[in-house]
Amino acid sequence: MSDEGRNVPQQSGGPGASSACPPAGSARPGSAGAGKVGALRQRLRGVVIPREHGAWALWLVPFFVGSTLTGFRPAHWLLLALFFFGSALHAKAMIRERNNPGWKRASLVYHAPLLAAYVALGTPRWLWVAVLVSFVRAASQPQRSKLPVVVTGFIEIATSIAFYLLFVMAFRPDLVRTCAAVMAVGLAAFLLNVPLGRWRARLPRFSARWFVAIHASIPLIIGLRHLLGIGYGWVPITVFFAVFGQLIGAQLAKRARVPEAAFAVRAMHQLPVAETAQFSGGGAINR
Image 1: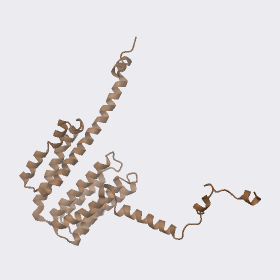
Image 2 (image 1 turned 180 degrees about the vertical axis):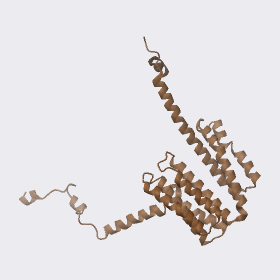
Image 3 (image 1 turned 30 degrees about the vertical axis):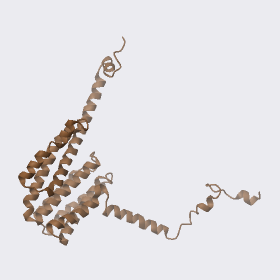
Image 4 (image 1 turned 180 degrees about the horizontal axis):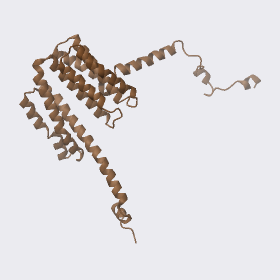
């Protein structure tokens, strides 16, 4: 082998690696610019159309449903877009960016002047109440809460439903009584199912009592709905709040079990040695 062959450095990938891997400085023309454009597109997509809890649905569904009840008007679309953009900011701050305080501040900074904008636009006072409820939700919910993601999502959906009902009440005076009755039945369904959900979480799954804990509130909710004259079209909202109550009750039962387990562990450590061994199944200690 000649001296030139000895001095040629070998590629780290073995024979043929030089033909498969181009040199570091030989990037394709325009690839860097395309990469920056793609990264910017992904970044804007994550801000404008966030993916937490189907936040895209929170943007689109109220537009179509609201237009059927209040009549299509561009001003209505603008008011809905202003609110649900703040909802998307809050969802992103609570889930994907829960470790970034900047998103929490951005949500609060957006919600504060939103109320002023609604007042300045001369919107009905029902909408002022809706935006105020949204601001209280954004300010009171801690960013690093120990709530599961599904609970955070349910809270956001419940807030959106409340805003939607108040929005309909603002522009359809003939539906004020119906929307108020729906909110009353939804609140009753939620309050009834919180203790039932807590009880259900302590029962064996698919047992008779487990099914009773799930369905016990249904006759009461149906009777209250008929008493207030609410049609079948509003049933999904009442079902949602019943499921929400079951979920919150289960979370309360789960949190209650943690102190009980810690107390049992401390009691085990405080027992005498012989009693501890007997309690743990090891039998009495031979004397």
